[in-house]
Length: 303
Image (cartoon, rainbow, N blue to C red; front, side):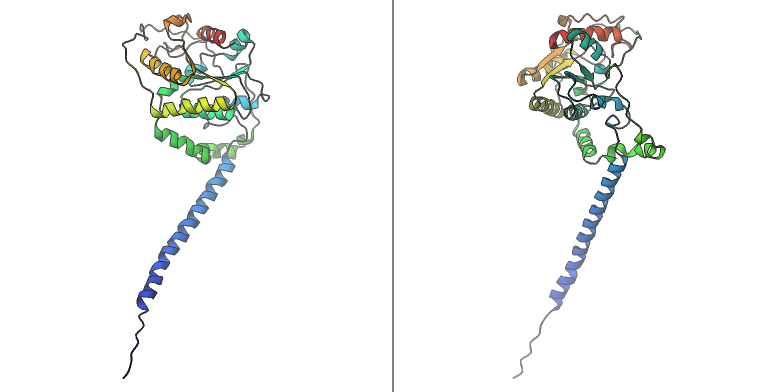
């Protein structure tokens, strides 16, 4: 009696052959990602600024001027958007308090960028107080903006991709310009009156902070606390963008979290802004006369 033994290797071979393309694709994908990571890392090194003042893109490099000052020489640090840049003068602040300071505010600065600046500043300076002007809490605090900024921090070429022009011209290697005596403040003698009436009229409503805005506030508070600095929130006079509804929301957060908050827009604050003469553009930004009043008022609370 004959016994026929049939060995079916087709399935096994087919399984091996079927598995190999998957392995190859995995290897190819891994190699591609490694090469891409290497290219991005190389470009990031190549295009990243050689001085700390060329950052946050190329628009407002002076915001990092604190990094060029002698280490641990500022007592107060101001950060925010253009409202703060035109309202808080480090020169006036030092005149009134004897405290050295730096204003790292700039136009269209986002909250996530304000947090980044505060975190970076502590690498160079040890101020006793950090003053965050809160107007930008109501400007683009989306998750998309946060992800974009975090990606730029991890992969610098995403932020500095246009620096190839500076690289080719050689200006990427130019020596840093030291901060001016204004220390980040933007002076202006222009006068354009605001005549829009009582912008702080209270209808009882609240302009709630977004979830990400609250995340940024917590991050800033934790960073300051970790470095032994006091965080102070302020809203400088701004007749075009501020309101009682916004003040109510920020005040509530500050009270809940034990953070000092001053709203210079409130009539009860007594800052003394004359909207016919103390604004350069119809109420959104103060001119130098208005900034002296706002800074003097703030200095009396922070000295």
